[in-house]
Length: 96
Image (cartoon, one colour):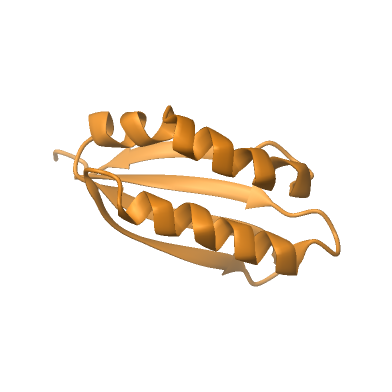
């Protein structure tokens, strides 16, 4: 299993619309092959700074979703609400 950390920063005053649209992205990801679970977290010092932590069965499953037309279409609605590019980090358990 891998974890994918997605970091986004929302432009001022777009939080409510962002919440609604980002929920749709996560709801669609839930149906993607290999999706295990996900949660969204808010930075306590900056409420517009959001993190989504998603668990995927494999990096191949994540890549399939990440590159999918479905995600691209959904993200086209989210990107204009962000004042920075999203940052994605793929993580795995250390093998020590």
